[in-house]
Length: 301
Image (cartoon, rainbow, N blue to C red; front, side, top):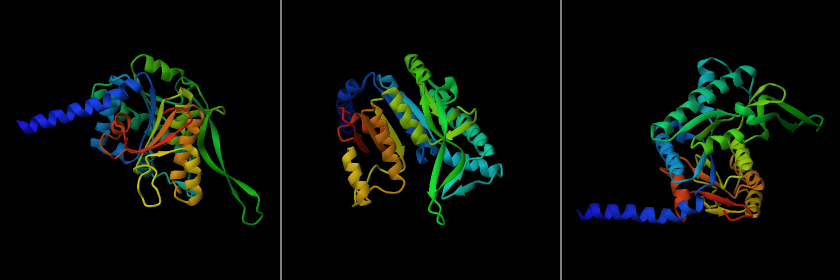
């Protein structure tokens, strides 16, 4: 009996700690990029759906942008479509982008929608194509020619980046109590379909919505210092110093740059968070210490 009482008291204390944050963030939009191993684990996927549904029920407006690289790779392999890589970057052919659209807008997006609806939420699957939400432009990569020292343009095929975002359909969904789940596929002005990096897409949508938070779920705890310990808070100047020292390197560089770009567009705080941690989003939003690395802009986060 005493053990049960302590357990209930602990739950009550958790609610008391969360209440000020529910008041603080009520009516605010949170854009969450969802991907990595958390998306491929059934138990974590269900917990994610429960967390997102809870956010909506306490008055926060979550918007989900998802990835799906491993699922695309698996389908390409099943269809015996070989991938070409240039300097480690996948070239997206017409056949590849067709598969990407099928996988992302079909099985991946609908699975996330079904998970949220299955735990009592109301979600809808969208892509950048819907209502011309996102207009893409072709991504160009350049590298120096070792012989002439002139820059060469690397053609990555149908890889795009957001050129323009019209968030009307997202806001209409929110106003109707529906959680948007968005696939990173968009139409270009040239009429072609483009696959967009999900981090980039999510950051751009967060900026267009003026989101209170941009949450980037990853497979690492957050930004780590030189000793491998997580840094709980950073600003742009500190990030610049850590990049120069090599502490922030490799794949973390584009992630922090995506966060900084979102902040420059008006997002008030960006978080890099380990999606493999149980209820990571709730711990980040509703506890004082949080669970990831918060990157602050000039306005209060």
